[in-house]
Length: 149
Image (cartoon, rainbow, N blue to C red; front, side):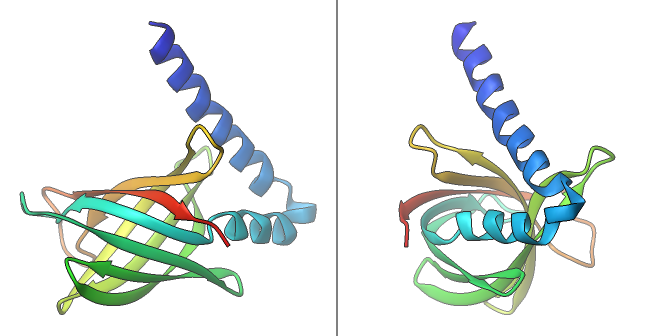
């Protein structure tokens, strides 16, 4: 029970911090920039493709380009690139990272929640989908920091 309460509290604090960081309109541009910069780094990734049981692993390097993020992905030896941005989700305006890229001629989209690990590094987890069409079985993905700038 304590472990579940601690996990809930950790997620709540991360989301509350992100909401506070992005919620103040007077400093929204500066704070969003700080939030974007906090995601920059190299990540190990594990996941499962949408509409499939096929799993994958690889690396994702995230860099900042203005008010968006650039994703350089290497999954199962295949290099791709994509973009991401911070957007609001649900009526509570929870900040999420929305990403888009192509892998082997297929377009993918993702919505990630941002968490932190025990060292306060970002950890992204989310659903992967096929944009423009119904995704009956979304994929999943988790990104774990391996290096920070």
